[in-house]
Amino acid sequence: MEGGRERMNEGGARIRIILVDGSSLFRQAIGGALGRVDGLEVIAESKTAKLAVNDAERTQPDLMVVDGDYFVSWLPTFIADVRAVAPDCKLLVLTSEQQLAPLIEALRAGANGFLTKEMSLEELVDAARTVAAGGVVVPQGMLSQLVRALLNQEGRKTDDSIMTLSKLTRRERQVLSLLADGYDKDAIALELAISPQTARTHVQNILAKLGLHSRLEAAAFARSHPILRQFVASDR
Image (cartoon, rainbow, N blue to C red; front, side, top):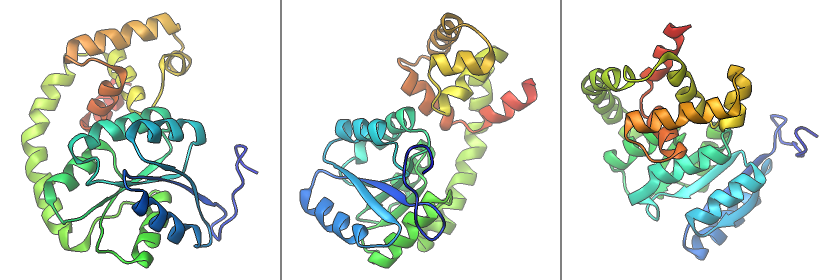
């Protein structure tokens, strides 16, 4: 036993999976297929984002397989919500088409893998294992497009990111970085050796300075600005 959960596949760890989709047919088909694979276990099937977040908080899964078509308009918010309650959960997004924009949006929001629904069961299983182990999965045919797009976008966004993050104090940047890792105010207080009230004040100041409305938004913002880690490292 490890962390109260049984772990027993060939790599020493059973991969515990939540499926998320509004279609019961999808959940039953994919769930049944994955459930027959050694080392994989479907522990929950969620038909709404709210249920998925609740299930993630309750079960702390290793992997969440999400129908990106169903969540396309608010996928970044959904991913941030999952990360806030289950920071160790990896996310694999499935979509019906190879579209670059949703891929970039999903990866920037914190998804760990992206596949189209044309994939075979074997490809899905391989992707699930790769993502659960900490890897990133992207359709081979889209990889070169993704790299070019990200390089172009990073060049334009870096200056804006620096300007935005410079509004924060050193301590606020540390707090924001911890929010990105899923820490709540009590965990932040413990990590930084400050009181929970002080941690709460820092969070409120961050929200005000960045024009955000919630801790989840702040976490999503931090994950979409990877240069924050460089700021924090240089602050030490």
